[in-house]
Length: 147
Image (tube, rainbow, N blue to C red; front, side):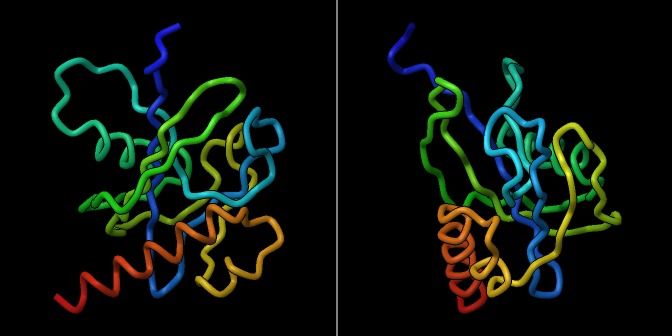
């Protein structure tokens, strides 16, 4: 195995009226079942694609929760291991454009929630890295509005 081989995962953080769109991962999911997460998934092999991160965020938000987004901005990234696979996770901030969020992919999504940063921080099913990501996104949003 190539020591530099990674799967690239992209998550889309959608904010509407001060709340974040989160999914509760389905119990059948092999990785992180039952926890809260931003909708997301793997970058698909598509040689020559010019915006694979943005395309993946849009695709996953549509497939998992039926939401359309406009602009997609990089916010942060981190590495993790899932079921023996090394992953790079890219978190994006996505501009909500429309669609009623619902669990469109029940094999992946048990439920959909719009939660405030405070509700996420206090939620038992929110992993620490999600809480940290929300803090960083909030700081990014604050910085973006003051420039």
